[in-house]
Image 1 (cartoon, rainbow, N blue to C red):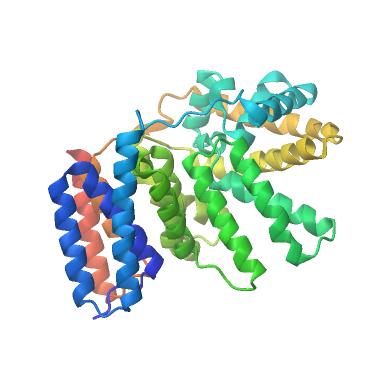
Image 2 (tube, rainbow, N blue to C red):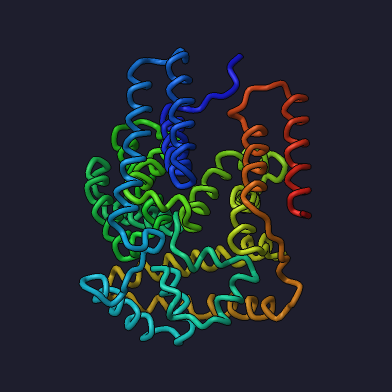
Length: 387
């Protein structure tokens, strides 16, 4: 019986994740996983080319993990100095430019939204955004890269640049924006996926979301194996996976795109949010539906003003928008019950994602069987939350 319909790239991504994860725990687990993989591929009715590629991906992941372990002093930490080189020059210019037209606090918020540098914000401001569920707007992720991609695409269309030339202009701009943002894992994932979509559109084909996500995971984990244990990497991929698994379901229940998108992202990232941060904002849905569009407009205007050099006056439109957002976040931040504190361990994450995948459209089981298995797993998940 055919149980799932995962694409080859998804299978290879899971193999790479399994190789790195098992290598982190013990050499014996690596050997066990390798034997199971070899046996599964030997008896599986799949093309020989896929068997070879899968085994090569397993070996490359292990070699990359080994090289990283023995050649990097602290592979868990990737730091960037925003004051070094061309990146420092550009970021200093942007911050100076924003302060010319905005109040200091609003300029710092918009600067953080554009490049993810939270060092310019006070601890209390960050906590206020956390309490309202808007903390993701302060950390550059796929959301920001997608917005930047849309801005560049719209500008190219307004300038009547031929569609065939879009890819050759978008690619260096995306790479430069990723460089300015410090190539964090979430940014790297978003840039890779945007480039895949851009090349697919250039070739007049439709890119598959899961395949693009899996290819991004394989590329990042081969270069940075320890990214598998980073909150930035896990949350970024979990959000996109949640959109693929849950968006259609939530949109059928609540036919409002912003609400369905927020619920899908939350459903995908919830276990990792609780694991790494141990909290979930109560007003997250309301804040993202009401305030997030204002922040998106501010981001659009900020990118436009900085990139055109002569249109900084439009930033005055951003001032009242950010003032309103700050007023709401400050009011919510004063509420002691605005955030629910819950935490769990790795077993709960595993159970949660098993239940999510079983309920997804990629598992072909009878509805009653899917509902029963998902109910059992979610029950186990809630039990693990209470333990």
